[in-house]
Amino acid sequence: MNHHRFLTKSEVRHKRFEAKIRYLKDSFTLWRRNSLMVIGTVIILLLILVAVFAPLLATHDPYDQVLPNRLAPPSRAHYFGTDSLGRDIFSRVVYGARVTLTIAFLVAMISTPIGMIIGVTAGYFGGALDEILMRLSDVFLAFPKLILAIAFAAALGPGVENAIVAIAVANWPGYARLARAETLIVKNNDYIQVIRTMGASNLRIMAGHIAPMCISSVIVRMSLDMGTIILTAAGLGFLGLGAQPPTPEWGLMVSDGRQFLVDQWWVSTLPGFAILLVVMGFNLVGDGIRDILDPHQRQK
Image (cartoon, rainbow, N blue to C red; front, side, top):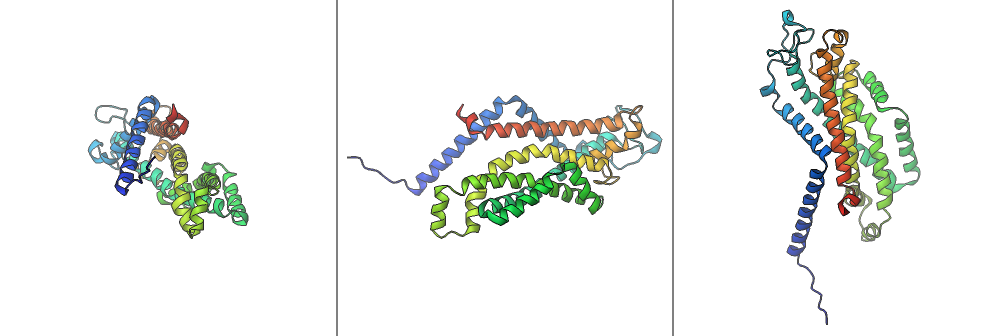
């Protein structure tokens, strides 16, 4: 005769802890096997370290103008040369990492929750509310993100804060669509029906049981969007709608060197290379995270 013993709370917690550790180990193994993701991770970590330790890494004051030394080529005194106002480009690129990271993460932190709230709400309630919210997202999706961000930035006025708001407003529909699709799958599951019959409110079901199921897909989308956000911010800076002089922002630095591109190539090229490297790093990590969170990859 078989005797079934229920697990105690401590045993349940221990098994959950073991499952989490096993999940992390499997994720690390998949990360280590993906050489491109390792490269992307190194690039992003270097960007973060450069942003954090900018005062220690910069060789000059990024705002210090030395007009007699303007447009000097790269040398031991100025690793990346100087710009049209005699400012050290290397130091400005280093400090520009702070501006770039700030814009990218603030946009992600604003647009992702907005998109998730709208998407989960539309998918859960359906009907007329779903139609209204999705048609609104269709209006935003009808335009390229950069064009939409330019329109909002032009309306709000130039500046880093307005650029962040403009990019966030142009970026939320993708998350809303993704969260709605996940919600439509999850909301009809049996356990959601059980929770509803137990008296849980709609808000509690959406926030506590449906939204967490959308997070993995949203994280993948967010990691892939970081490169686009950085490019959009650089584009706004290039057009004069983002960061304003003398802020050391990479897109603005590329714009400042346009007229010197033939003879003094370093003024625009080196900040542009920094944009290229960071965008590539985020894209490689985004592709890797998508593979790690794919159940089929874990089964292999």
